[in-house]
Every structure is written in structure tokens, then in C-alpha cells.
Amino acid sequence: MKVDYEAYKNKLESQFNQDLREILFDHYITQELGPSVGAKQLGIPRQVFVHFLNLYNLNDLKFNQSIE
Image (cartoon, rainbow, N blue to C red):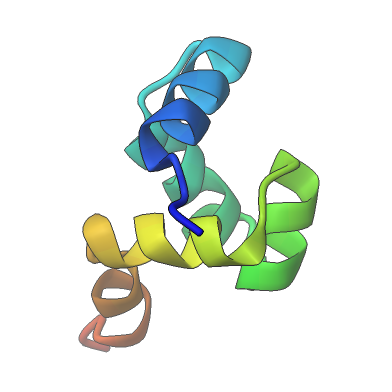
């Protein structure tokens, strides 16, 4: 089954009136929600949430922050 990531992207961007990266950043980094909870709050499948995290390299941002 092919997932229409573009449709999810468009749905979320119009729902929140923000760029998808900003929406994901807020949920995943700022609110510190995991993929399952973040996906549930956004009303999208976990697989789609994880796809976009990888697309925008948000896992790297969250887990490779240098502590100074």
C-alpha cells in the first residue's frame, strides 16, 4: 500500500497554518512527544509521523544535541 505523504503534509499544514517542519518540531522537540503520541495528537498514522521525522532529520536534532 502506497502512503500519500503529500496529502498528510497538506492536511496538517492547512489545519495548523504552519510549515510541516514547524508542526513536527513543536510536537516532537518542544512538547517532547514520542512518535505514537505525537501521531495520535495530529491524527495521522505513526508511520507517517516517523517518515516526516526522518525527512526533516528531527531525530538527529533531538538526540544529538551537544550539552555544553
